[in-house]
Image (cartoon, rainbow, N blue to C red):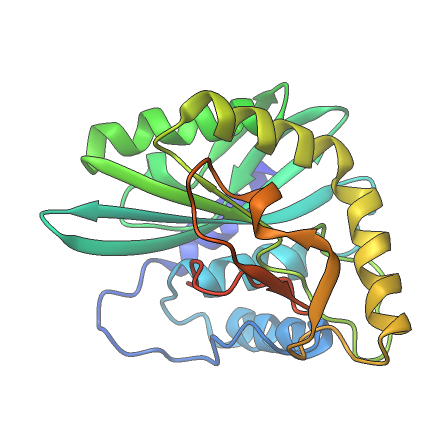
Length: 232
């Protein structure tokens, strides 16, 4: 994991405001990994989304490593900011890799007991940088198998950070069940006759169960995106 993070950091952060690579996430996993290979060949500066692509590419053969995308939305003086990292689970311990202007907002050692604990560490990091972390969205494990047309579920669960205890509990539970949920998600897509990534409502998951108290009802599409939730 440390080697993966070191490689990503050597590519350096892209401050130019111009994307050198295709950063679309709603593509088959194979296409995303092709973009990652192109990044490693050209070695141009990247941002957080490309860093996740590269991390997935470099860990694709490590089947014992569970990889879940995690997106953050924060705000400063009314301005919203979005960010994404790749949470990793190995031997029941969690950590993360990625890239940002600030190291505390992407790399975490593999030392946390749950996805909820990892969230709390990121919340503390955000409090040192941005006044308000508004919500967190987590996806499902990225497959290590290259099936034809395989997609990544980027946003399956969204929690509001105002209720820290509720957010921590939901994220910890999601981390424990993520592998099983991914199998269910893929099976539902097959039953509904659609490829993951197409916008069809997932019947077993409702917004009332994935959002904090008092939030508006939202449904989850087949690509795992909660309508109105974070992107990156």
